[in-house]
Image (cartoon, rainbow, N blue to C red; front, side, top):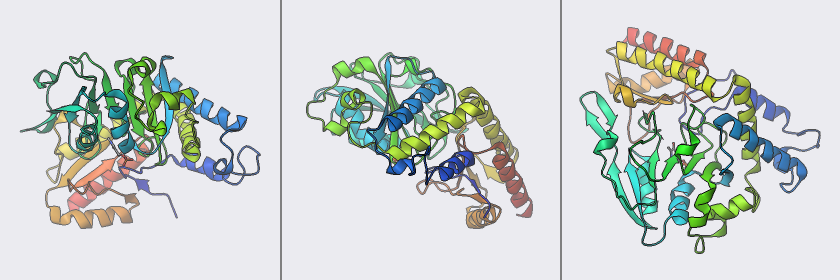
Length: 361
Ligand SMILES: *Cc1c(COP(=O)(O)O)cnc(C)c1O
C-alpha cells in the first residue's frame, strides 16, 4: 500500500526516510545483531546515540551551553505537573495563560501545587478567534513564572512571537510547534514538548531548561523521576530511558539537519500554511475560524459551509490518500496538521481535493 498524506494532529506523521532507516536497522542496529530497542542503555553505544541526539538538537535550535536538554519519560501532560512541582513552593504564585484546551489541563494540575493566577489569552473578534494583545493581560507580579502554549493544537492558534512585556520567567508548552521555526531559546526559562507531534513517537518528552533554575527548585518532596536537577545530573539516564523514542528522535534530528535545518523548515512551513489559508480565504465554501494574525502554521482548522457534508468530505479525502483531517472532538470541523514531516506536495494535493469537493457541492 502507498503511504498516505497523514494530517493527524498527534501522534503525527514521521518522515518516510526516517521510518525506512529505522526499518532497515530494526533487526540489526549498527552491526550489533539486535535492534536499539533490545540494547542496554548503560553501554558506550547508547551513550553515543543520546549524546549525538543532544548535539544535533542543540545545533538545530542553537541551544546555549547554560541550558540542559532532558529526554524525559512520558508526555507533555506529565510536564503539566512536573513544572509546578519543581518550580513552586507552597506559598508561591505562577501566572498561566488560559487558551483553548491544553493550557486548561496545565492549569488544573498546577493548582495542586501553588497559587495559580489565570489570564485568558484569547478573544473572539469579528475576524475570528484571536490572541488578546499582551498589554491587556493582567498578571500577578510576584509570580515565579508565566506558563503559556505557543501553538494551541486543537484550534490552530499560534503565538508568532514570545510575550515581550512580561519580564519574569517564561515556561512554554511547545508540543506542536517545536522545531517548526527558529526561536530564541534565551527568552525562555523552560520549554517542554511531547515527541509525537513534531519529533517522533509518543512516550518521550523533551525538556530544555536553564540550568540556574535548578538552585531555586523545590525538589525534596518531588519523586526522583520528577526532579529536573536529578534527571539532568544523570544525563537523562537515571533509570531506563525511553530508548526507542530517543533513537527515532535522533533520526528525525539528522533528517532535519539534512533538509537544511530549522530555518529551511520554517520557510517551507510558511509556504505550506499560506497555500492552504489562501485557498480557504478565497473560497466561500470553507471557512477559517481563526483571525489572520493568530493563525497556526502547524494546525490549520477549517469548517465546511454545511457541516452535514463533513463525513462525506472525510471519506472522499481518505479514498484519495489524505487521512486524519477530522477536527478535534471538542471543536468539530476539519483540521489539517502540517508539521515538518508533511511535504509541500501533500498540501497541494489537499488543496486540489478541496477544490474538487467544493466544485461538486
Ligand atoms: C498534544 C499536546 C499535549 C498533550 O500531550 P500528551 O502526550 O497527550 O500528554 C499538550 N500540549 C499541547 C500543546 C499538545 O499539542
